[in-house]
Image 1 (spheres, chains in turn cyan, orange):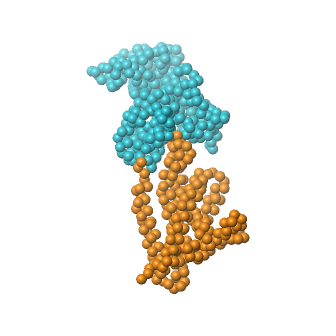
Image 2 (cartoon, each protein chain N blue to C red):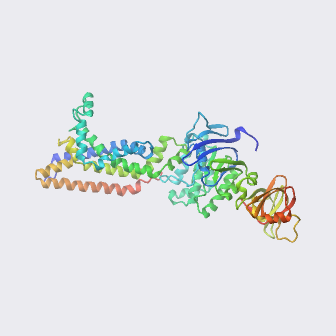
Image 3 (cartoon, rainbow over the protein chains, first blue to last red):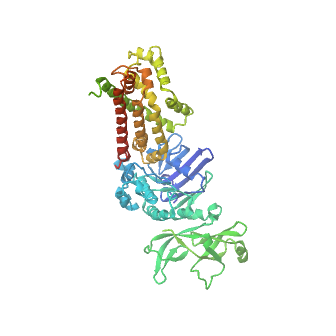
Length: 362
Length: 228
């Protein structure tokens, strides 16, 4: 995570648009998914377009050791080895599904073709879609899958995705998310993923860049950044922590699965993944309550030893508590101000975190 | 009974040749012009657009008159062509082509421009992110997507040139085999009270135009969609 220089994406851009100024700089690891997260109008799409070269900003851009832009260099869009997935699939309506997929593939030299067509077809389940011929005969989600495949087939050094799910209905989103998670697992190239949906970010991202009004508020590993109480993300209604855990035990009788992580273990509804495989669990702040003594006779199965790291007021009646669980894990808990005072909670105290529900991400 | 005398046939042939040449030239001139009008943000874009559209509102005789002055021995163009030993352009087929190109310009430019504007920038941006350079994007994405626009432009430019009368009369006159096109031939017949001959020509023109348009429309809708 600390390996710098070559295996990094370094971005620094300034662009004056009619209504606002983009002035954003961040660096992200050149592996995994980096989410550009922020409210609409925060400049995340503009920033992504600058990285692609679709907007001409001043600044510098280094991707994995290559300079795409600085004071003297401006590589035009078609010379940047990137893949770009737009909000709407934007398939070429005059071309067949197959010709759409091959459009970019045909334009890169043979020596640079690292992603074979069959691989992408398999990854994204495109076989049946190719047979249908005309892109007009595909659903929204299917079109977006083709668009992702089309971008991947240019063997990009980085994949840029601009809210690829936002134009889709809930069903299509659910249909496409597993494919994105699979890409997240299997793809070796870094992904910059623009989103304003926290659940997508929690599911897919490893690294988080928080944008507001054209500026970068924070940038860091997903788990750490989501747990920072000085950032607005911790105060969202669906604020929460993300925990990477391993499948440890299946309980056939009650159809439950135990997940282990360094801070303890969590019981969740049975999952299909085999022993040892990594899964990502999301625990919302509103689903975590705090007890000063080991609770007895509680219906809540998941009770973790924790230490209070920080407490912050959140509105007139609530506080948000950051709990350290084990060596490196964090939970957030949202409780009332009254409970804090009744239990005399303060930083440093050893407590028990009761987790009412855990959402599995993959 | 002889339907068309040789002179009339010559006029028919000349008309088709004129319309064909003009349409072809217009495709080459109107396409870049339409592209520029669709994408430019220059302040004088409005003026250029107005200039292109001028023949839509001007009486053809006015346009013909000014072209006659310009291309005549004392006009700027006329002096230029004289200096280049090309000779005077009025009352020649070339002069007629130039006049017709200008006169039919808006009919070719506007459909293509509309098509370029309707597709927006997105398909071109997508193509750029898929490694297509400037010309590649234009020919592999912009032109195929603007097909309906080109289709309309070709039909309108061709038909408009076939039906043109005012500019021809002012600029080209009535020289058989050189500038006497169909519309002028019909006019001649009517002037000479040869209504029968005028009927054949006029009716033939109606039928021909209808068949061409019908053919284009029928084949157009389907075969323009490429399934490569």
